[in-house]
Image 1 (spheres, rainbow, N blue to C red):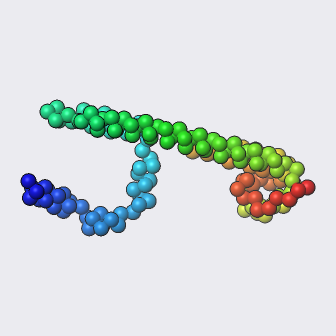
Image 2: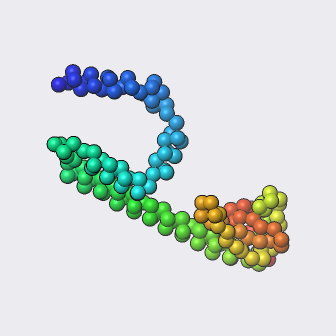
Image 3: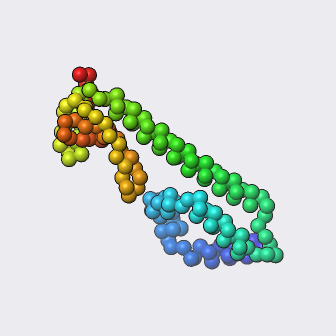
Length: 154
């Protein structure tokens, strides 16, 4: 029995490139692939697995429960990520609103140095990826809150 498993593992190993066997794959490309998978993708894979399983040797109940647990864990992680992103965005808005009337120095959206009193605060949303950015306005120029270098009381 061990000779059969050794033969099949050797045959499986010959199907991989030497870079894959030595573990030199690009981790950024691998991570990008996994990051793009969502709960719906995982569910689709699970349904395909169930449809294509051997009827004489069905999936073990423990494996099914483990996969359902993974689905719930992925959903909870996605929800936590959304909540933390929202909390971070709200904290940036609170921080920026506290800067109204204060003298700030930083890098403007047009890459120029800005030095002046914050007049107002706005929130802009990128339509391509729904990323929010909090901007402070100094005179006629704007800058992201992240680009403020110095804050001085007025």
